[in-house]
Structure formats: C-alpha cells, structure tokens
Amino acid sequence: MGTLEGKKALITGAASGIGRATALLFAREGAAVAIADIDREGGESVVETIAGQGGSAVFIPCDVSVAEDCNRAVERTVQKFGRLDILFNNAGIIRRATVPDTTEEEWDRAMAVNSKSVFLMCRYAIPVMARAGGGVIINTASGWGLVGGRRAASYCASKGAVVQLTRAMALDHGEQNIRVNCICPGDTDTPMLQEEARQLELPPVEFVAGAADRPLKRVGSPEDIARAVLYLASDASSFVTGTTLVVDGGGLAG
Image 1 (spheres, rainbow, N blue to C red):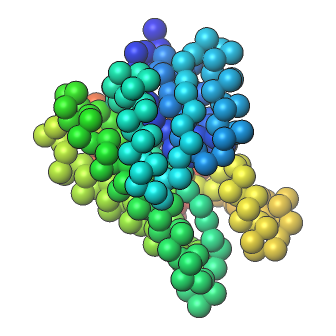
Image 2: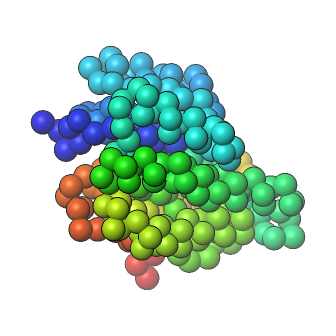
C-alpha cells in the first residue's frame, strides 16, 4: 500500500512543473488526484498518464484567481471522489521587475494567482475538510517568501503573504484536525525558471548555471519538491503544522 492509499487530493497548477510531478507521485502513492489548471491540454495529459499507470485522476479547468472556479474545483473533487483529504495550492506566476517597473495590472495579477488563490481555495476546502473530520493543506511559497530577491518585488510580496497565511490558518484550524504547511522551493527546473530567464533577457543555460550556485551545486527538479510535498501530505508529518519547509539545495543556509 502507498503512503497516500485511499486519499483524495486536489492540486492546483498541476498541468506542469512541480504540480505535475506531485500529481504523478501522489497517484503512485495511492491517492486519487484532481488536476486543476487553466492549461487544459497539459492537465488532460497528466490525467492520461495517471490513468495509464492504473491510477485515478480528473481534470478540472480552473483559474485560481476566480472565486467561482475555486468553488467549482472543490465541489467537483468531492463529487468525483466523495471527499477531499489533501489540498495542494501550487499554482503560481512570476514577474521579474522592480516596483517602478511593475505595472498595477502585473502587481494585481501576481497577488491574485500567487496568494489570493490560496485564500480562495482554502475558503471552500476548509469547511469540506472540517465536516469530514480533518485534512491537510500544503501551500507553495518560495525562498523569496522568507528573504528578499532582486527584481522580483511582486513575487516576493505574494509569496511572503502565503507564508503568513499558512501560519494563520494553522492556528485557526488545528482544532478541526486540519494541518496547514507550506513549502519554500529554491530555483527548480520548471517552465517558470525558463520564463524568468526570458524576462531577464538572459540565455537559459547561463541563467540556470547561476541559479545552481548553492551548496548542492544544482537547481532542483520537480520531483525533489514533490517528495517534500508528499512528506507534508502524509501521516509522516502528523505533528507538523504551521511550518515552512525550505527545499532549496542549501541556498538560504548562509
């Protein structure tokens, strides 16, 4: 039996990168997985892969910045699987710019996708979990939610909000047997990392080489982060709530 045998999970931003790797890992560990994303093609591809490996998954089109979409994602997960045990709020975007170079629209979009989405998904998921006797919520923050980063003002602000929202919800909902934690990945080999290189007008190879300047001398893989999420989702972390788990190859160590 897998670590998550019989569990029902909802993952946002699951069509690619960390979300995709986590969905595949959760399915291998026995969970049924709802794939929520605006990328239909990518999301359906994840579902097909899980089904081909004998797992259970469903794709749910979802713009995580829209309340109705978030509510529908939770409702459809429960309709499909009967309950919701694990919510992984992973959807995110990045804008590499200083405050003067960030437009109001860019700021609002970063805050909506990276932090408001966590509020919205949890607003609908927590009552469902509470009625069922508990659950687990994991939020994707960032190392730059704990320390500052250059030319990433909106991203740092939005991810810092995720860290604090995680702590607040852990305090509010522990008595309902709902654990709430967040992961803080370092640079990870995902489409977002390539998008950062494009925004900074740097060759991708050069950008990744710079990002690998950390004690473990490499950037992370989506699977590296997925394994950390699995720990927080499983009973192995049954006494862990309100924490930030840094998974960055030692980048913030000193």
